[in-house]
Length: 92
Image 1 (cartoon, rainbow, N blue to C red):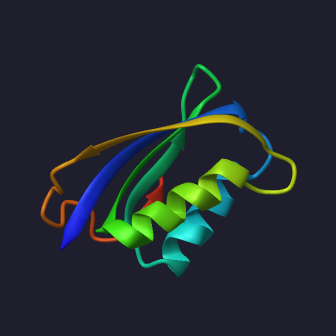
Image 2 (cartoon, rainbow, N blue to C red; image 1 turned 90 degrees about the vertical axis):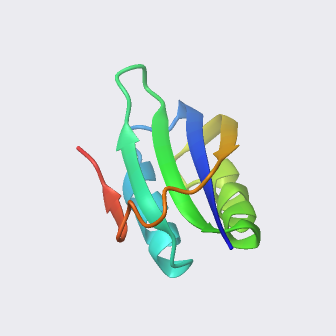
């Protein structure tokens, strides 16, 4: 069963490879959705997949790549979009 989560990651997460790292983690976990930088300095993520896999993804996001300093990860769960996202991508 698919689940959907919208995530906001705060901290020093822009300019440190966080989007590319998130993309790589999502692809490894076979998630669909997207990641993008927000104007306020946060990173925004939408992901869909099995709940247990999404929980693992959230754990990865709390750490981030080596140069990142994550201060918070806020996740909002909702009904999946029924394959609105064919793959995981980086939005610019």
